[in-house]
Amino acid sequence: MKQNYTVRHGALEGIEAFLAVARHRNFRRAAAQLGVTPSAVSQAVRALEARMGAALFVRTTRSVGLTEPGQRFLDRAGPAFEELVAAGEAVRDIGQRPTGLLRLSVPRAVVPLILEPMIASFCRAYPEIELEIAASDEMVDLAAGGFDAGIRLGQFIAVDMVAVRLTPSFSFVVVGSPDYLKRHGRPERVDDLRNHACLRLRRSNGAIAPWAFVDGNETIEAMLSGPLIAHDYPTLLGAAMRGVGLAQTPRPIAEAPIAEGKLDPMLDGIAATTPGVFLYHPGKRQVLPKLRAFIDHLKSAA
Image (cartoon, rainbow, N blue to C red; front, top):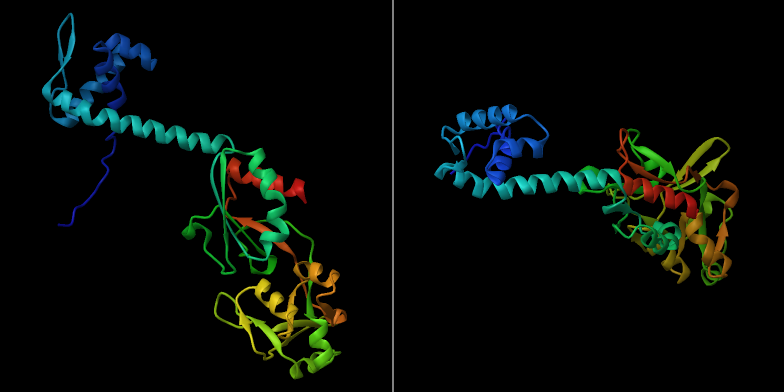
């Protein structure tokens, strides 16, 4: 059976006064606890009884006792009210100091480059924060997914988000293993790539990302082909290191294998650039202390 749930205006009014009187069995002591006048407590209880349609207290000149409806109401309203108070205190606590669960949506490539170096120090500095990192290259709706913030390349962040820069701008570099280049030669121009095995990225919207280059002020996008399509850059980079083909990846994640001689960069003169990596969140009015602590820690660790 379908039920209709409605919240009546003022449904909670008077409950705190009722509980205080029930606890002390005295209107004056209840008023002192609440910091109001005894007449205010009496009026609040009377209004509650009127809404309930039953007397909750038996009053005499010397004592105050609970009626049967009053006792039943106390048995159920007391624990419920304590839960409401605890819920309010928990929310207030999260809003006033760094505590609680902090959920972040980040691309896989960002974890070793930006997050891993600072996770240990952050957890030590803020032991009351639980840090949850959801590593995925899919673009997610932060609110729908229950995330406090996300990390993405600047060009993919919606304009209504608050963005905090984490890295400078950088280029996308074409890389290949020395073994692959020895077998297939080194491309010198964009057109040369059509004769190579080009490893490609499928974006979260389902489209295969073209390789991007620049010629002066003009952007060149090349739709290429090859033996592998992946959904993240680390997979493409690993395949390139094993000689499967050429890959175009953000320069920062390719720096280490380039320095180690596992990959060779090419076509640097026409490399496209990105604004960089940003942390983003929807909190234009207020940033919770747990997220502010994380942002400040990221900046200090950079």
